Length: 297
Image (tube, rainbow, N blue to C red; front, side):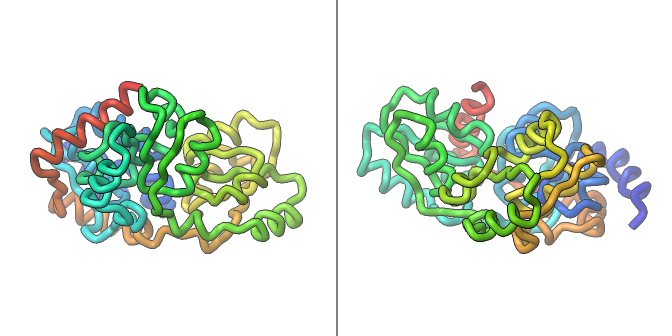
């Protein structure tokens, strides 16, 4: 695939390509910005362009469309979805809110627009604790990720009422995996994502979002790291710190929906500006309030 052709298409369409850290290395290389959900959410609102091609999954493109309704937002693959985001429905959240009428509602950005519209504020894995602690309420409904909810609960005095969703790529990590990796790489620092199970987090040296892992590894004196997140994260770590070693906690930690995108899909999306992602009203306006509150923090 000719990367120059993709560059010409971006210029012709006045488009930018945003790619999540879990994308294939070749896709990351042609992106204008690679980052985590928070970074890409901010970029979607601030970039000067007519079109955004999102190399990611459905909720990410929805968030970009909500924040930038004047731009054409395109998802590289129409059926690239986040299973965890669909583990809670808006109707289920409404039912939970009736059970806890005094609770505030925080939804992980890995959620559908309908769920965001039913929430008071969104958060990412990087700012979940900060968002929860900013809430006036002492009782917080936190959806959809049960593991991130458990992590947040450790760092707040508020009562957390968790959803029951999970990321299959992170939820598969076990204590035995961590112990085996540490035995194989005894000098390595263990970095894991807060979507991991609590017992895995207990064995880690640091718990970080994907961008947090980059900062942690860059600032650390250590030269070797075990990375407990989706394997796509190894590419930006190795690219930014070629003098350090990075080992996956598991080579099977793969988000198959992220991997549906390749260079041919990026090029096709740029050529056709399809499939377009549009979030209808009034869902978009309600969800925008929850997302903007997060960005304001």
